[in-house]
Image (cartoon, helix red, strand yellow):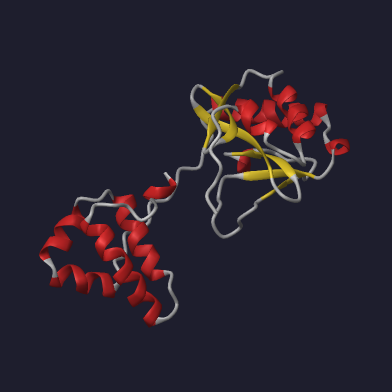
Length: 197
């Protein structure tokens, strides 16, 4: 399922059936701060000096605020969660399931702390993982000079996407099917996830 693209925060909010009023209320709170409002990945995002600090979004069962560097928030009220334990180091999410849960004073306190943390330069730098080329892909690159040349032209992140795509497959036949799928894409200089960018 492709993510819907929005041209403005208003368009994003107006398209929400379930949490529209709640998002309007959160937005009003964001607007009492010094944040600049923008859209990133078609989702309302709030920045300080061009750096992503917070955002808000609606999901099926809840709406919420997330903090890009939420790991640094004191979270004295214990409202933040790590939505993806194995993947997310810095980001934290604050989920709500009703308008009644929106505590303006408390939200403003968390937003103010997030703004100050950004100004203080508190941020987790992403860890650079080494590129691990799966043996199936390496064998194909070794066998075909034009494939190898095309692969070398990709950025490190594109190479990693292809390598991870094969490495994440559990079964040998799945790895082989994935390899057969990506070879024409590599030869055409198409990134694995370009259609989502």
